Image (tube, rainbow, N blue to C red; front, side, top):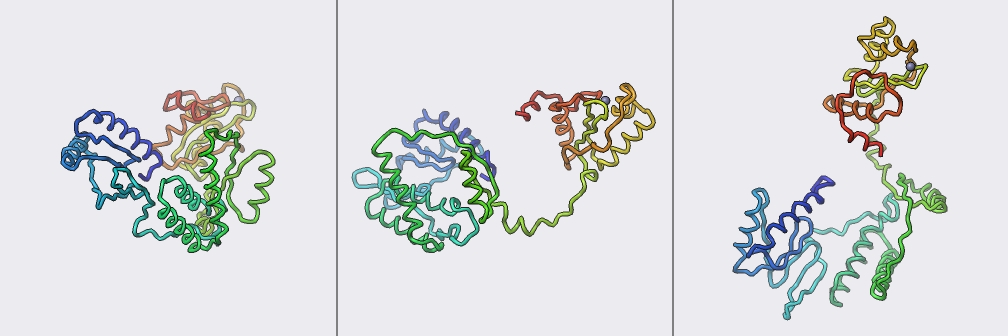
Length: 337
Ligand SMILES: [Zn+2]
């Protein structure tokens, strides 16, 4: 599940999977799935047939089963317990190895990031139907976790009250507060300047979200030598001095080597060697060598054609290029949206 697309793809795949099997005799009559975790109600005597049915659909999709013990079963972050009257009782499930370690109060993070774990625990506390005892146990656990990570009682109480009020409001009305359109802006977080900057932004209806850019790794590992652009390979552009035309090309060698070749062709009037030379001859124009530049550093040579085609297809200026780009696709226009 490492890739960002994985949960979406898993969902698409599993939806299709479920629709195809849902009319089968041994398909569970209760089937609740979250990505790849499923809660199902199956008659014990049909368990083997059900597992066989599920595993028969696709050769790489195999199912394993965890049965209830003493009428109790963990599912996601819940423990579900069967009551005597065939109803279910819920409480919060934590792995035995859970350490309750979150971002500590003295950590150099933006406040909202420190609160996030506690907001999610508070949300769960007020939205999972629990009995009084389990509710109290969980609330104590949240307070303990806060203490362990260096937060004072007020920090948690504020968060808990917020979720309690929200729950109460939702119980009283089905009306939802109108969501105002918010402009978001992503900024690096620096403890001393973030707050003043944010208050200025808020006046102009911008809501700032923060990324931790100033990590120790960023501070310590920026030892790379800066390679000048003309020592790199990739897609480059050469402009004309007398008109708006540009030449866009690719090179797998250093840019300065390729530019020298173009320059030689221009100096010696060899139009067949370079479209740049062809332009100077046919238009009687000069080349603006000073402003020739690398548009995109491409290290993987197999990607060069795609990058060159994209820059050629989406160029704003007229082109000196005499041939079509290596890849013709109207999809490149989408990159400009
Ligand atoms: Zn020109």
